[in-house]
Length: 211
Image: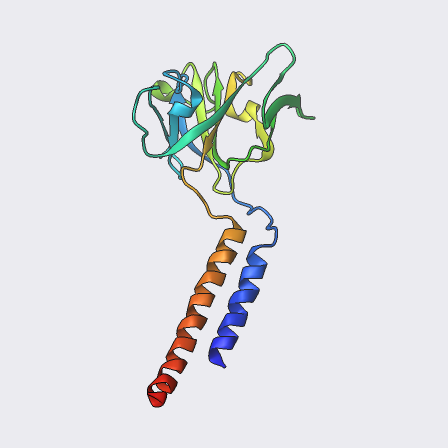
């Protein structure tokens, strides 16, 4: 009786896990501010992002013949077209608008199959609030969002002294995350093993009596 209740709970949980889930609402964190374009030694896929809290972010470039490094590999780079203020490629597009206060707003939309937990913005100027050695001429900002970047905005006027943009980079999450349906199947498998073991224990005494 107890095993039946456990099995029912597992089945209900597995069914719930297979239903579409709303994306988690998590805050975007600026994890790193760097000088210059950090991914220049090869294709964007050879550049790795890491760091999940403010000030811990980093970008590591691995050449085309180099060995993979720890972190999240690059997915794509969208160059910004200054002629019409837009940039786009498969699964990603960005554009700049001006809000009622005159701020330049970067809008983006990403629909790719790979989860992008890092977004980098490169701009040929200094970041707002920088000073001394931390005031880079060409600034690269790396943002992190554990729930993944899909669509949203960045206020470039509050980020850069010269509110513009060169390109935007997206980076993978660095590892396979099981889909909800996969978790459901795994739970069903564990439940099946448990039931089989339970039945096996019940049958053993009966076999011994017959012998």
